[in-house]
Image (tube, rainbow, N blue to C red; front, side):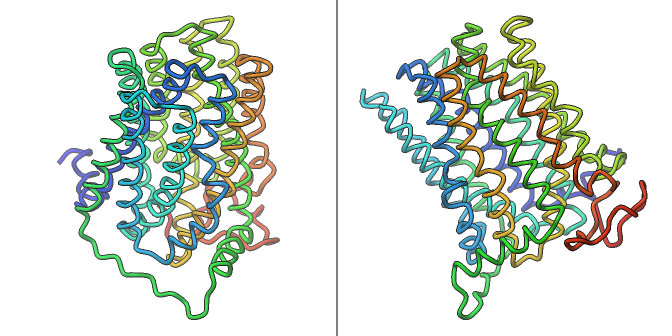
Length: 437
């Protein structure tokens, strides 16, 4: 038996339900990354939106994480996760299908794009919190790193292929019709998820527990763990500047570098190759360097390559822009696999939804703020200047990690130390107590 065959037979891919979860993720992610190119191009090319309007559109897509992120976790912990994910996919499919329908009828406006972005954003909050909370129900703890690595590989593969497909479709049939692929992807995801058979018990509500009390419990759990606090701080900072990039890159590539839609898609696809490489390498890097060490190393080593984004205006153009994104995304995916697997293994099952939602609120709540900042900076100073601010921000992302106990650890503990507990004595290479993957 080959090494690959042994890995499949002993890993999560041998499980039918996980394969269906993976197939659903592939369909939904491919559609979403086609729209990553197509929806801003609908605004820029069809509706002639300003840089500020594109920033508002990006902010609308992520505003739900800031507005309902905390209560969403408490709601998810009271529901079965799988039916919730199916309903969220259906809502996203219908919302996205309304864009080409309105465009063909000649009534598409920026106001509708904002509404579509807000609706899909709300559905995505519930889907993502439920998805991360459902995985530990589907897989044993010792398979979580492999399972998350497989999901990151699917997401990164969609990042590679989706923008290229999106740019090509925009060039061939127009930006509004390219959005159909996203609607179809969400519909397929719902069908795959409906095929999962593993029984999921309905969570038992605690008598007399209010929504506010449930939200507070999730906050106490996250804020009471020093390692979760520092991960939230660094990730929130990184997401702020990632949103700034997302709000300005389409305007920069089209109006500063002068790229056609097909070329925009290719640039973003080439950049995502780094993310795919990061997903494939994350497990091996964590095993070789340590799960704690790889979290801060990935941000420290790859962050400076963000400087290539604004530099591309003067040197190298699209190639240099794509190179910068590829290296930064490599580091981001390695970081995500390590920290997501850690927090899933750490958290009690009854708190998973609230833990994930609290962290999403803290880490993803910065996304609409970064998008608004990016749109305003690009509108006032130009897209190139906005990217210089973005690059400077990425240099600051690892600072919370470097000032934390993570710097003195090789591996993450099976149970993180309580506030004030000493961790400096852990020697490089020392394995923590308890099972870790």
